Image (cartoon, rainbow over all chains, first blue to last red; front, side, top):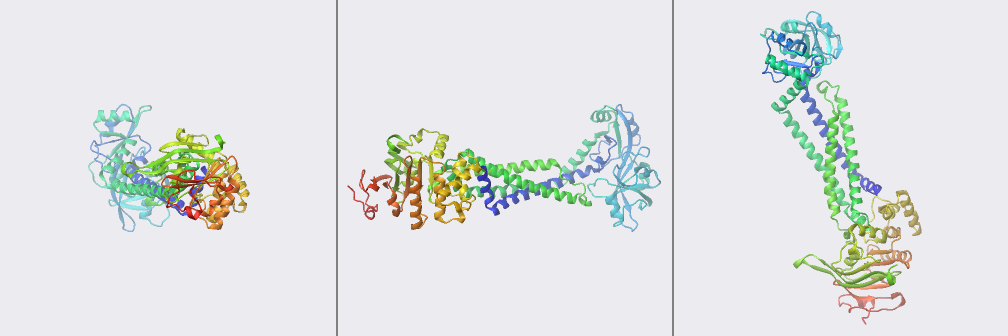
Length: 379
Length: 258
Protein backbone atom coordinates (compact mmCIF):
# COMPACT_ATOMS: atom_id res chain seq x y z
CA UNK A 1 0.00 0.00 0.00
CA UNK A 2 3.03 2.26 0.17
CA UNK A 3 2.69 3.35 -3.41
CA UNK A 4 -0.98 4.18 -2.78
CA UNK A 5 0.11 6.42 0.10
CA UNK A 6 2.74 8.13 -2.04
CA UNK A 7 0.36 8.65 -4.94
CA UNK A 8 -2.24 10.12 -2.59
CA UNK A 9 0.45 12.44 -1.25
CA UNK A 10 1.66 13.83 -4.57
CA UNK A 11 -1.69 13.83 -6.37
CA UNK A 12 -2.59 17.31 -5.18
CA UNK A 13 0.53 19.07 -6.37
CA UNK A 14 -0.34 22.43 -4.87
CA UNK A 15 -0.86 20.98 -1.41
CA UNK A 16 2.15 18.71 -1.70
CA UNK A 17 4.47 21.55 -2.66
CA UNK A 18 3.03 23.87 -0.03
CA UNK A 19 3.79 21.20 2.57
CA UNK A 20 7.33 20.75 1.26
CA UNK A 21 7.99 24.48 1.11
CA UNK A 22 6.51 25.10 4.56
CA UNK A 23 8.93 22.58 6.05
CA UNK A 24 11.81 23.78 3.87
CA UNK A 25 11.20 27.39 4.86
CA UNK A 26 10.92 26.55 8.55
CA UNK A 27 14.09 24.43 8.39
CA UNK A 28 15.96 27.19 6.60
CA UNK A 29 14.77 29.84 9.02
CA UNK A 30 15.80 27.74 12.01
CA UNK A 31 19.17 26.78 10.49
CA UNK A 32 19.88 30.34 9.49
CA UNK A 33 19.02 31.96 12.80
CA UNK A 34 20.60 29.32 15.02
CA UNK A 35 23.83 29.25 12.97
CA UNK A 36 24.14 33.03 12.89
CA UNK A 37 23.45 33.14 16.62
CA UNK A 38 26.16 30.58 17.31
CA UNK A 39 28.51 32.36 14.89
CA UNK A 40 28.02 35.72 16.58
CA UNK A 41 28.24 34.27 20.06
CA UNK A 42 31.56 32.60 19.30
CA UNK A 43 33.06 35.83 18.00
CA UNK A 44 33.95 37.17 21.47
CA UNK A 45 36.33 34.24 21.75
CA UNK A 46 37.85 34.68 18.27
CA UNK A 47 41.15 36.08 19.53
CA UNK A 48 41.36 33.34 22.14
CA UNK A 49 40.77 30.61 19.58
CA UNK A 50 43.34 32.14 17.22
CA UNK A 51 46.11 31.58 19.78
CA UNK A 52 47.03 27.99 19.07
CA UNK A 53 50.47 27.81 20.73
CA UNK A 54 49.42 28.00 24.37
CA UNK A 55 46.78 26.03 26.25
CA UNK A 56 46.45 28.18 29.37
CA UNK A 57 45.42 31.78 29.86
CA UNK A 58 46.32 33.40 33.18
CA UNK A 59 44.71 36.68 34.16
CA UNK A 60 43.74 38.90 37.07
CA UNK A 61 41.07 37.26 39.24
CA UNK A 62 38.68 40.11 38.35
CA UNK A 63 38.97 39.53 34.62
CA UNK A 64 35.81 37.73 33.57
CA UNK A 65 36.28 37.52 29.83
CA UNK A 66 38.71 38.53 27.13
CA UNK A 67 37.39 41.97 26.19
CA UNK A 68 37.51 43.61 29.61
CA UNK A 69 40.92 43.03 31.09
CA UNK A 70 42.47 44.18 34.34
CA UNK A 71 46.20 44.05 33.75
CA UNK A 72 48.62 41.90 35.76
CA UNK A 73 51.83 43.15 37.29
CA UNK A 74 54.98 42.37 35.32
CA UNK A 75 56.42 40.08 38.00
CA UNK A 76 53.34 37.84 37.81
CA UNK A 77 54.90 36.37 34.69
CA UNK A 78 57.82 35.03 36.75
CA UNK A 79 55.52 33.70 39.46
CA UNK A 80 53.63 31.72 36.85
CA UNK A 81 56.80 30.39 35.30
CA UNK A 82 57.80 29.03 38.71
CA UNK A 83 54.61 26.97 39.17
CA UNK A 84 55.27 23.22 38.86
CA UNK A 85 53.72 21.80 35.70
CA UNK A 86 54.22 24.97 33.66
CA UNK A 87 56.59 24.29 30.74
CA UNK A 88 56.78 27.89 29.66
CA UNK A 89 54.88 31.15 30.03
CA UNK A 90 54.93 34.30 27.91
CA UNK A 91 53.28 37.72 28.18
CA UNK A 92 50.39 38.84 25.98
CA UNK A 93 48.95 42.29 25.64
CA UNK A 94 45.36 42.59 24.49
CA UNK A 95 43.73 45.95 24.35
CA UNK A 96 42.34 48.57 22.08
CA UNK A 97 43.93 51.61 20.49
CA UNK A 98 43.10 54.13 17.81
CA UNK A 99 44.72 53.79 14.41
CA UNK A 100 44.74 56.49 11.77
CA UNK A 101 44.91 55.74 8.07
CA UNK A 102 46.75 57.67 5.34
CA UNK A 103 43.58 59.55 4.43
CA UNK A 104 43.01 60.67 8.02
CA UNK A 105 40.28 58.14 8.73
CA UNK A 106 40.75 56.49 12.07
CA UNK A 107 39.24 53.57 13.83
CA UNK A 108 39.49 51.70 17.10
CA UNK A 109 41.57 48.58 16.62
CA UNK A 110 42.19 45.48 18.71
CA UNK A 111 45.88 45.38 19.47
CA UNK A 112 47.57 42.12 20.38
CA UNK A 113 51.12 42.39 21.72
CA UNK A 114 52.84 39.02 21.47
CA UNK A 115 56.04 37.85 23.18
CA UNK A 116 59.07 39.45 21.48
CA UNK A 117 61.26 36.37 21.74
CA UNK A 118 58.89 33.59 20.79
CA UNK A 119 56.05 35.37 18.94
CA UNK A 120 53.63 33.06 20.78
CA UNK A 121 50.15 34.42 20.11
CA UNK A 122 50.96 35.70 16.62
CA UNK A 123 48.42 34.85 13.91
CA UNK A 124 48.94 31.50 12.20
CA UNK A 125 46.86 32.12 9.10
CA UNK A 126 48.85 34.60 7.07
CA UNK A 127 47.63 35.93 3.71
CA UNK A 128 50.61 38.22 3.10
CA UNK A 129 54.03 38.16 4.79
CA UNK A 130 55.25 36.11 7.74
CA UNK A 131 54.96 36.46 11.50
CA UNK A 132 58.76 36.79 11.64
CA UNK A 133 58.41 40.12 9.87
CA UNK A 134 57.18 41.40 13.25
CA UNK A 135 60.84 41.61 14.22
CA UNK A 136 61.18 44.71 12.04
CA UNK A 137 60.91 48.13 13.74
CA UNK A 138 57.31 49.48 14.10
CA UNK A 139 56.02 46.30 12.53
CA UNK A 140 52.45 45.09 12.82
CA UNK A 141 50.29 42.52 11.11
CA UNK A 142 46.75 43.58 10.29
CA UNK A 143 43.79 41.37 9.47
CA UNK A 144 42.28 41.36 6.00
CA UNK A 145 39.08 43.16 7.02
CA UNK A 146 41.11 45.88 8.73
CA UNK A 147 43.39 46.31 5.73
CA UNK A 148 40.39 46.69 3.41
CA UNK A 149 38.88 49.23 5.80
CA UNK A 150 41.96 51.43 5.82
CA UNK A 151 42.92 50.78 2.21
CA UNK A 152 39.66 50.11 0.38
CA UNK A 153 39.95 48.68 -3.11
CA UNK A 154 43.69 48.15 -2.86
CA UNK A 155 45.36 44.77 -3.34
CA UNK A 156 46.53 43.02 -0.19
CA UNK A 157 50.17 44.00 0.24
CA UNK A 158 52.74 44.78 2.91
CA UNK A 159 54.51 48.13 3.22
CA UNK A 160 51.51 50.32 4.01
CA UNK A 161 51.61 52.49 7.12
CA UNK A 162 49.16 53.57 9.78
CA UNK A 163 49.57 55.83 12.77
CA UNK A 164 48.95 54.93 16.38
CA UNK A 165 49.67 57.23 19.27
CA UNK A 166 51.59 59.53 16.89
CA UNK A 167 53.83 56.64 15.95
CA UNK A 168 54.30 54.93 12.60
CA UNK A 169 52.83 51.46 12.26
CA UNK A 170 54.38 49.53 9.41
CA UNK A 171 52.13 46.86 7.99
CA UNK A 172 54.43 43.90 7.38
CA UNK A 173 51.81 41.25 6.89
CA UNK A 174 48.10 40.55 6.51
CA UNK A 175 46.45 37.81 8.51
CA UNK A 176 43.21 35.92 8.17
CA UNK A 177 42.31 36.52 11.82
CA UNK A 178 38.90 35.36 12.97
CA UNK A 179 36.28 38.09 12.99
CA UNK A 180 36.06 39.78 16.41
CA UNK A 181 32.72 40.50 18.03
CA UNK A 182 32.90 44.27 17.49
CA UNK A 183 34.27 43.86 13.94
CA UNK A 184 37.26 46.10 14.76
CA UNK A 185 40.46 45.63 12.78
CA UNK A 186 42.91 43.26 14.54
CA UNK A 187 46.58 44.26 14.76
CA UNK A 188 49.34 41.99 16.02
CA UNK A 189 52.64 43.44 17.08
CA UNK A 190 55.46 42.63 19.48
CA UNK A 191 54.80 43.09 23.19
CA UNK A 192 57.47 45.74 23.51
CA UNK A 193 56.14 47.55 20.45
CA UNK A 194 52.57 47.59 21.80
CA UNK A 195 53.67 49.87 24.61
CA UNK A 196 54.49 52.55 22.06
CA UNK A 197 51.29 52.06 20.10
CA UNK A 198 48.86 52.39 23.01
CA UNK A 199 50.55 55.12 25.00
CA UNK A 200 51.18 55.35 28.64
CA UNK A 201 49.52 52.63 30.71
CA UNK A 202 50.71 51.56 34.13
CA UNK A 203 50.53 47.84 33.40
CA UNK A 204 50.48 46.20 29.99
CA UNK A 205 50.44 42.57 30.96
CA UNK A 206 46.87 41.57 30.02
CA UNK A 207 47.45 37.85 30.05
CA UNK A 208 50.14 35.31 30.52
CA UNK A 209 49.97 32.48 28.03
CA UNK A 210 51.31 29.22 29.41
CA UNK A 211 51.93 25.71 28.26
CA UNK A 212 51.68 22.74 30.60
CA UNK A 213 54.60 20.36 30.88
CA UNK A 214 54.47 17.26 28.73
CA UNK A 215 51.85 14.87 30.06
CA UNK A 216 50.27 17.36 32.46
CA UNK A 217 46.62 18.19 31.88
CA UNK A 218 45.88 21.89 31.28
CA UNK A 219 43.00 21.80 33.80
CA UNK A 220 45.25 20.47 36.51
CA UNK A 221 48.00 23.00 35.79
CA UNK A 222 45.37 25.78 35.86
CA UNK A 223 44.46 24.72 39.39
CA UNK A 224 48.09 24.66 40.40
CA UNK A 225 48.63 28.16 39.02
CA UNK A 226 45.57 29.47 40.84
CA UNK A 227 46.66 27.89 44.11
CA UNK A 228 50.25 29.13 43.79
CA UNK A 229 49.59 32.68 42.56
CA UNK A 230 46.01 33.58 43.45
CA UNK A 231 45.49 34.53 39.80
CA UNK A 232 42.78 33.17 37.52
CA UNK A 233 43.89 30.49 35.08
CA UNK A 234 41.67 29.04 32.34
CA UNK A 235 42.21 26.61 29.54
CA UNK A 236 41.55 27.91 26.02
CA UNK A 237 38.22 26.07 25.92
CA UNK A 238 37.17 27.35 29.35
CA UNK A 239 38.14 30.92 28.53
CA UNK A 240 36.25 30.76 25.22
CA UNK A 241 33.21 29.51 27.07
CA UNK A 242 33.59 32.35 29.61
CA UNK A 243 33.37 34.88 26.77
CA UNK A 244 30.39 33.07 25.23
CA UNK A 245 28.53 32.97 28.54
CA UNK A 246 29.35 36.58 29.38
CA UNK A 247 27.74 37.80 26.16
CA UNK A 248 24.90 35.37 26.62
CA UNK A 249 24.12 36.77 30.07
CA UNK A 250 24.89 40.42 29.53
CA UNK A 251 23.60 41.30 26.08
CA UNK A 252 20.20 41.23 24.36
CA UNK A 253 21.49 38.95 21.63
CA UNK A 254 20.12 35.69 23.03
CA UNK A 255 16.71 37.30 23.61
CA UNK A 256 16.52 38.72 20.09
CA UNK A 257 17.68 35.55 18.43
CA UNK A 258 15.62 33.47 20.83
CA UNK A 259 12.46 35.32 19.77
CA UNK A 260 13.27 34.77 16.09
CA UNK A 261 14.04 31.11 16.66
CA UNK A 262 10.81 30.69 18.63
CA UNK A 263 8.82 32.34 15.84
CA UNK A 264 10.54 30.10 13.30
CA UNK A 265 9.72 27.12 15.46
CA UNK A 266 6.07 28.10 15.83
CA UNK A 267 5.68 28.88 12.15
CA UNK A 268 7.58 25.72 11.32
CA UNK A 269 5.30 23.66 13.53
CA UNK A 270 1.94 25.24 12.86
CA UNK A 271 2.01 25.67 9.09
CA UNK A 272 3.28 22.23 8.05
CA UNK A 273 1.40 20.59 10.91
CA UNK A 274 -1.87 22.22 9.98
CA UNK A 275 -1.39 21.62 6.26
CA UNK A 276 -0.60 17.97 6.83
CA UNK A 277 -3.57 17.60 9.15
CA UNK A 278 -5.91 19.18 6.59
CA UNK A 279 -4.42 16.94 3.92
CA UNK A 280 -5.25 13.84 5.98
CA UNK A 281 -8.72 15.08 6.93
CA UNK A 282 -9.53 15.71 3.28
CA UNK A 283 -8.59 12.10 2.57
CA UNK A 284 -10.68 10.73 5.44
CA UNK A 285 -13.34 9.37 3.10
CA UNK A 286 -10.68 7.50 1.15
CA UNK A 287 -9.18 6.11 4.33
CA UNK A 288 -12.69 5.12 5.40
CA UNK A 289 -13.16 3.22 2.13
CA UNK A 290 -9.81 1.51 2.63
CA UNK A 291 -10.83 0.52 6.17
CA UNK A 292 -14.15 -0.86 4.90
CA UNK A 293 -12.36 -2.83 2.18
CA UNK A 294 -10.22 -4.45 4.85
CA UNK A 295 -7.09 -2.37 5.17
CA UNK A 296 -6.02 -2.58 8.81
CA UNK A 297 -5.50 0.45 11.03
CA UNK A 298 -1.86 -0.49 11.34
CA UNK A 299 -1.45 -0.36 7.58
CA UNK A 300 -3.21 3.01 7.38
CA UNK A 301 -1.03 4.40 10.17
CA UNK A 302 1.97 3.17 8.19
CA UNK A 303 0.67 4.99 5.11
CA UNK A 304 0.26 8.27 6.99
CA UNK A 305 3.67 7.96 8.61
CA UNK A 306 5.23 7.24 5.23
CA UNK A 307 3.60 10.37 3.84
CA UNK A 308 4.88 12.35 6.82
CA UNK A 309 8.42 10.99 6.46
CA UNK A 310 8.50 11.75 2.73
CA UNK A 311 7.18 15.27 3.20
CA UNK A 312 9.40 15.90 6.23
CA UNK A 313 12.60 14.58 4.69
CA UNK A 314 12.05 16.29 1.34
CA UNK A 315 11.26 19.62 2.99
CA UNK A 316 14.17 19.21 5.39
CA UNK A 317 16.60 18.35 2.60
CA UNK A 318 15.46 21.37 0.60
CA UNK A 319 15.75 23.61 3.66
CA UNK A 320 19.25 22.36 4.44
CA UNK A 321 20.25 22.81 0.80
CA UNK A 322 19.08 26.43 0.84
CA UNK A 323 20.87 26.96 4.17
CA UNK A 324 24.10 25.45 2.87
CA UNK A 325 23.92 27.64 -0.23
CA UNK A 326 23.27 30.68 1.95
CA UNK A 327 26.26 30.05 4.20
CA UNK A 328 28.49 29.13 1.27
CA UNK A 329 27.61 32.51 -0.22
CA UNK A 330 28.14 34.52 2.97
CA UNK A 331 31.16 32.67 4.34
CA UNK A 332 33.63 34.82 2.42
CA UNK A 333 31.70 38.05 2.78
CA UNK A 334 33.72 40.15 5.26
CA UNK A 335 30.98 41.15 7.72
CA UNK A 336 29.68 37.60 7.98
CA UNK A 337 32.98 35.76 7.58
CA UNK A 338 33.45 32.81 9.84
CA UNK A 339 29.73 32.28 10.38
CA UNK A 340 29.27 28.70 9.36
CA UNK A 341 26.53 26.10 9.31
CA UNK A 342 27.54 23.63 12.06
CA UNK A 343 26.60 20.00 11.49
CA UNK A 344 25.17 19.92 14.99
CA UNK A 345 22.60 22.55 13.92
CA UNK A 346 21.75 20.46 10.87
CA UNK A 347 21.18 17.37 13.02
CA UNK A 348 19.18 19.30 15.63
CA UNK A 349 16.88 20.76 12.99
CA UNK A 350 16.42 17.27 11.58
CA UNK A 351 15.20 16.19 14.99
CA UNK A 352 12.90 19.23 15.22
CA UNK A 353 11.40 18.48 11.78
CA UNK A 354 10.95 14.86 12.80
CA UNK A 355 9.08 15.99 15.92
CA UNK A 356 6.93 18.45 13.95
CA UNK A 357 5.80 15.96 11.31
CA UNK A 358 5.51 13.27 13.97
CA UNK A 359 3.21 15.51 16.00
CA UNK A 360 1.13 16.45 12.96
CA UNK A 361 0.94 12.78 11.98
CA UNK A 362 -0.23 11.77 15.44
CA UNK A 363 -3.12 14.23 15.34
CA UNK A 364 -4.03 13.08 11.83
CA UNK A 365 -3.68 9.42 12.74
CA UNK A 366 -6.01 9.91 15.66
CA UNK A 367 -8.72 11.18 13.31
CA UNK A 368 -8.27 8.18 11.05
CA UNK A 369 -8.22 5.65 13.88
CA UNK A 370 -11.49 6.89 15.36
CA UNK A 371 -13.05 7.03 11.90
CA UNK A 372 -16.02 4.68 11.65
CA UNK A 373 -15.59 2.80 8.35
CA UNK A 374 -19.38 2.74 8.03
CA UNK A 375 -19.04 6.42 7.12
CA UNK A 376 -18.47 5.25 3.53
CA UNK A 377 -22.12 4.24 3.33
CA UNK A 378 -23.28 7.79 4.07
CA UNK A 379 -23.42 9.19 0.58
CA UNK B 1 -20.75 -22.19 0.52
CA UNK B 2 -22.68 -21.81 3.76
CA UNK B 3 -25.11 -24.29 5.22
CA UNK B 4 -28.29 -24.68 3.15
CA UNK B 5 -26.98 -22.21 0.59
CA UNK B 6 -27.46 -19.35 3.07
CA UNK B 7 -24.81 -16.62 2.88
CA UNK B 8 -26.30 -14.31 5.50
CA UNK B 9 -28.64 -15.42 8.26
CA UNK B 10 -30.11 -13.03 10.77
CA UNK B 11 -32.70 -13.48 13.49
CA UNK B 12 -33.98 -10.80 15.82
CA UNK B 13 -31.17 -8.47 14.83
CA UNK B 14 -31.27 -5.10 16.59
CA UNK B 15 -29.08 -2.05 16.53
CA UNK B 16 -29.49 0.85 18.94
CA UNK B 17 -27.55 4.11 18.68
CA UNK B 18 -27.15 6.49 21.63
CA UNK B 19 -28.32 6.21 25.22
CA UNK B 20 -31.18 7.37 27.36
CA UNK B 21 -33.54 9.80 25.73
CA UNK B 22 -31.39 10.04 22.63
CA UNK B 23 -31.62 6.32 21.90
CA UNK B 24 -32.44 5.51 18.32
CA UNK B 25 -33.57 2.00 17.36
CA UNK B 26 -32.12 1.68 13.89
CA UNK B 27 -32.88 -2.06 13.61
CA UNK B 28 -35.79 -3.69 15.46
CA UNK B 29 -35.48 -7.46 15.21
CA UNK B 30 -34.54 -8.11 11.61
CA UNK B 31 -35.02 -11.69 10.33
CA UNK B 32 -33.45 -12.21 6.94
CA UNK B 33 -31.79 -14.88 4.80
CA UNK B 34 -29.51 -13.95 1.92
CA UNK B 35 -28.86 -16.90 -0.37
CA UNK B 36 -25.86 -17.74 -2.50
CA UNK B 37 -26.43 -17.34 -6.21
CA UNK B 38 -28.99 -14.60 -5.64
CA UNK B 39 -29.08 -10.85 -5.91
CA UNK B 40 -30.94 -9.45 -2.91
CA UNK B 41 -32.08 -5.90 -2.48
CA UNK B 42 -32.82 -3.95 0.68
CA UNK B 43 -35.26 -1.21 -0.17
CA UNK B 44 -37.14 1.36 1.84
CA UNK B 45 -37.39 5.05 2.62
CA UNK B 46 -34.55 7.05 4.13
CA UNK B 47 -34.00 6.20 7.77
CA UNK B 48 -35.62 2.79 7.43
CA UNK B 49 -32.43 1.02 8.52
CA UNK B 50 -31.17 -0.37 5.19
CA UNK B 51 -27.67 1.08 5.45
CA UNK B 52 -27.44 0.17 9.13
CA UNK B 53 -28.35 -3.41 8.28
CA UNK B 54 -25.74 -3.45 5.53
CA UNK B 55 -23.13 -2.03 7.93
CA UNK B 56 -23.95 -4.68 10.55
CA UNK B 57 -23.83 -7.50 7.99
CA UNK B 58 -20.42 -6.34 6.76
CA UNK B 59 -19.07 -6.00 10.28
CA UNK B 60 -18.58 -2.24 10.01
CA UNK B 61 -21.01 -1.85 12.93
CA UNK B 62 -21.72 -4.23 15.81
CA UNK B 63 -25.26 -5.47 16.33
CA UNK B 64 -26.80 -4.63 19.70
CA UNK B 65 -28.56 -8.00 19.97
CA UNK B 66 -29.81 -10.85 17.85
CA UNK B 67 -28.23 -13.60 15.87
CA UNK B 68 -26.13 -13.00 12.77
CA UNK B 69 -24.18 -15.49 10.67
CA UNK B 70 -22.27 -14.23 7.65
CA UNK B 71 -20.52 -16.82 5.48
CA UNK B 72 -20.60 -19.28 8.38
CA UNK B 73 -18.98 -16.75 10.73
CA UNK B 74 -20.51 -14.90 13.63
CA UNK B 75 -19.02 -11.37 13.37
CA UNK B 76 -19.41 -10.72 17.10
CA UNK B 77 -17.15 -13.70 17.83
CA UNK B 78 -14.33 -12.36 15.66
CA UNK B 79 -11.59 -10.14 17.02
CA UNK B 80 -11.06 -6.77 15.39
CA UNK B 81 -8.13 -8.07 13.37
CA UNK B 82 -10.02 -11.20 12.38
CA UNK B 83 -12.97 -9.10 11.28
CA UNK B 84 -10.72 -6.90 9.11
CA UNK B 85 -9.18 -10.02 7.59
CA UNK B 86 -12.63 -11.54 7.08
CA UNK B 87 -13.82 -8.42 5.26
CA UNK B 88 -10.72 -8.21 3.13
CA UNK B 89 -11.01 -11.83 1.97
CA UNK B 90 -14.74 -12.34 1.70
CA UNK B 91 -16.41 -9.02 0.98
CA UNK B 92 -16.53 -6.74 -2.02
CA UNK B 93 -17.90 -3.22 -1.71
CA UNK B 94 -19.56 -0.89 -4.21
CA UNK B 95 -20.31 2.53 -2.80
CA UNK B 96 -22.83 5.18 -3.80
CA UNK B 97 -20.12 7.78 -4.47
CA UNK B 98 -17.77 5.16 -5.90
CA UNK B 99 -15.04 6.16 -3.39
CA UNK B 100 -12.29 5.61 -5.89
CA UNK B 101 -8.92 7.05 -4.88
CA UNK B 102 -8.49 10.11 -7.13
CA UNK B 103 -4.71 9.75 -7.29
CA UNK B 104 -4.80 6.20 -8.66
CA UNK B 105 -5.57 5.07 -12.19
CA UNK B 106 -8.58 2.86 -12.83
CA UNK B 107 -6.42 -0.27 -12.85
CA UNK B 108 -4.65 0.77 -9.64
CA UNK B 109 -8.00 1.41 -7.95
CA UNK B 110 -9.16 -2.04 -8.94
CA UNK B 111 -5.92 -3.43 -7.52
CA UNK B 112 -6.44 -1.93 -4.04
CA UNK B 113 -8.05 -5.03 -2.43
CA UNK B 114 -5.21 -7.15 -3.82
CA UNK B 115 -2.61 -4.72 -2.48
CA UNK B 116 -4.35 -4.78 0.88
CA UNK B 117 -4.04 -8.56 0.78
CA UNK B 118 -0.30 -8.34 0.24
CA UNK B 119 -0.11 -8.92 -3.53
CA UNK B 120 2.88 -7.17 -5.13
CA UNK B 121 2.14 -3.91 -6.88
CA UNK B 122 2.97 -5.00 -10.44
CA UNK B 123 1.00 -8.21 -10.19
CA UNK B 124 -1.96 -6.49 -8.53
CA UNK B 125 -2.15 -3.74 -11.14
CA UNK B 126 -1.81 -6.30 -13.96
CA UNK B 127 -4.70 -8.26 -12.49
CA UNK B 128 -6.65 -5.04 -12.15
CA UNK B 129 -6.07 -4.26 -15.82
CA UNK B 130 -7.09 -7.78 -16.72
CA UNK B 131 -10.31 -7.46 -14.75
CA UNK B 132 -11.15 -4.17 -16.38
CA UNK B 133 -10.67 -5.86 -19.74
CA UNK B 134 -13.31 -8.42 -18.86
CA UNK B 135 -15.66 -5.52 -18.06
CA UNK B 136 -14.91 -3.87 -21.40
CA UNK B 137 -12.85 -1.12 -19.79
CA UNK B 138 -9.39 -1.99 -21.04
CA UNK B 139 -9.04 1.30 -22.89
CA UNK B 140 -9.70 3.24 -19.68
CA UNK B 141 -7.39 1.24 -17.42
CA UNK B 142 -4.84 4.04 -17.12
CA UNK B 143 -7.32 6.87 -16.77
CA UNK B 144 -7.72 8.70 -13.48
CA UNK B 145 -11.19 8.70 -11.89
CA UNK B 146 -11.58 12.37 -12.77
CA UNK B 147 -11.23 11.43 -16.42
CA UNK B 148 -14.00 8.83 -16.24
CA UNK B 149 -17.77 9.26 -16.55
CA UNK B 150 -20.01 8.29 -13.65
CA UNK B 151 -20.89 4.99 -15.30
CA UNK B 152 -17.25 4.21 -15.96
CA UNK B 153 -16.34 5.05 -12.38
CA UNK B 154 -19.01 2.72 -11.07
CA UNK B 155 -17.76 -0.04 -13.37
CA UNK B 156 -14.27 0.48 -11.96
CA UNK B 157 -15.76 0.31 -8.47
CA UNK B 158 -17.52 -2.91 -9.45
CA UNK B 159 -14.25 -4.33 -10.74
CA UNK B 160 -12.61 -3.36 -7.43
CA UNK B 161 -15.36 -5.20 -5.56
CA UNK B 162 -14.91 -8.37 -7.64
CA UNK B 163 -11.18 -8.55 -8.32
CA UNK B 164 -10.29 -10.58 -5.24
CA UNK B 165 -13.17 -13.03 -5.83
CA UNK B 166 -15.15 -12.38 -2.65
CA UNK B 167 -18.12 -14.47 -1.50
CA UNK B 168 -20.35 -11.56 -0.66
CA UNK B 169 -20.78 -8.36 -2.66
CA UNK B 170 -22.46 -5.41 -0.96
CA UNK B 171 -23.57 -2.41 -2.95
CA UNK B 172 -24.80 0.82 -1.42
CA UNK B 173 -27.05 2.72 -3.83
CA UNK B 174 -24.89 1.74 -6.81
CA UNK B 175 -27.08 3.54 -9.36
CA UNK B 176 -28.26 6.60 -7.47
CA UNK B 177 -25.45 8.79 -8.80
CA UNK B 178 -26.06 7.62 -12.38
CA UNK B 179 -28.65 8.44 -15.01
CA UNK B 180 -31.25 5.80 -15.82
CA UNK B 181 -29.57 4.29 -18.86
CA UNK B 182 -26.13 4.16 -17.24
CA UNK B 183 -27.61 2.75 -14.05
CA UNK B 184 -29.32 0.03 -16.04
CA UNK B 185 -26.09 -0.79 -17.86
CA UNK B 186 -24.19 -1.01 -14.58
CA UNK B 187 -26.83 -3.32 -13.12
CA UNK B 188 -26.69 -5.56 -16.20
CA UNK B 189 -22.95 -5.77 -15.79
CA UNK B 190 -23.30 -6.42 -12.08
CA UNK B 191 -25.86 -9.19 -12.66
CA UNK B 192 -23.71 -10.75 -15.33
CA UNK B 193 -20.41 -10.69 -13.47
CA UNK B 194 -21.22 -10.69 -9.76
CA UNK B 195 -24.02 -13.21 -9.43
CA UNK B 196 -22.63 -16.73 -9.23
CA UNK B 197 -23.76 -19.89 -7.46
CA UNK B 198 -21.05 -19.49 -4.82
CA UNK B 199 -21.58 -15.80 -4.24
CA UNK B 200 -24.30 -13.59 -2.80
CA UNK B 201 -25.01 -9.99 -3.72
CA UNK B 202 -26.78 -7.46 -1.51
CA UNK B 203 -27.85 -4.11 -2.88
CA UNK B 204 -29.26 -1.25 -0.86
CA UNK B 205 -31.24 1.00 -3.14
CA UNK B 206 -34.00 3.52 -3.55
CA UNK B 207 -33.96 3.11 -7.28
CA UNK B 208 -37.19 1.35 -8.33
CA UNK B 209 -35.88 1.12 -11.90
CA UNK B 210 -33.48 -1.64 -10.96
CA UNK B 211 -35.82 -3.79 -8.87
CA UNK B 212 -36.25 -6.17 -11.82
CA UNK B 213 -32.68 -7.35 -11.36
CA UNK B 214 -33.42 -8.69 -7.87
CA UNK B 215 -34.05 -12.29 -6.91
CA UNK B 216 -35.20 -11.15 -3.50
CA UNK B 217 -36.32 -7.79 -2.18
CA UNK B 218 -36.59 -7.01 1.50
CA UNK B 219 -38.71 -3.95 2.13
CA UNK B 220 -37.67 -2.08 5.23
CA UNK B 221 -39.30 0.58 7.32
CA UNK B 222 -38.57 1.86 10.81
CA UNK B 223 -35.81 -0.68 11.35
CA UNK B 224 -37.90 -3.69 10.40
CA UNK B 225 -38.46 -5.80 7.34
CA UNK B 226 -42.04 -5.09 6.46
CA UNK B 227 -42.30 -7.26 3.36
CA UNK B 228 -40.18 -9.80 1.59
CA UNK B 229 -40.38 -10.70 -2.04
CA UNK B 230 -38.63 -13.98 -2.82
CA UNK B 231 -38.03 -15.87 -6.02
CA UNK B 232 -39.04 -12.80 -8.02
CA UNK B 233 -37.48 -13.94 -11.27
CA UNK B 234 -39.78 -16.94 -11.22
CA UNK B 235 -42.75 -14.65 -10.81
CA UNK B 236 -43.44 -15.70 -7.23
CA UNK B 237 -44.19 -13.02 -4.63
CA UNK B 238 -44.65 -13.81 -1.00
CA UNK B 239 -45.09 -11.36 1.79
CA UNK B 240 -43.52 -13.63 4.29
CA UNK B 241 -43.43 -11.21 7.17
CA UNK B 242 -45.44 -8.23 8.24
CA UNK B 243 -47.85 -6.09 6.22
CA UNK B 244 -46.26 -3.45 4.05
CA UNK B 245 -46.40 -0.10 5.82
CA UNK B 246 -48.81 2.52 4.61
CA UNK B 247 -45.99 4.96 3.82
CA UNK B 248 -44.02 2.60 1.69
CA UNK B 249 -44.75 2.96 -2.03
CA UNK B 250 -45.87 -0.60 -2.54
CA UNK B 251 -48.63 0.46 -4.86
CA UNK B 252 -46.22 1.81 -7.43
CA UNK B 253 -44.38 -1.48 -7.38
CA UNK B 254 -47.62 -3.40 -7.92
CA UNK B 255 -47.22 -5.33 -4.70
CA UNK B 256 -50.24 -6.86 -2.97
CA UNK B 257 -49.78 -7.97 0.61
CA UNK B 258 -51.04 -11.50 1.15
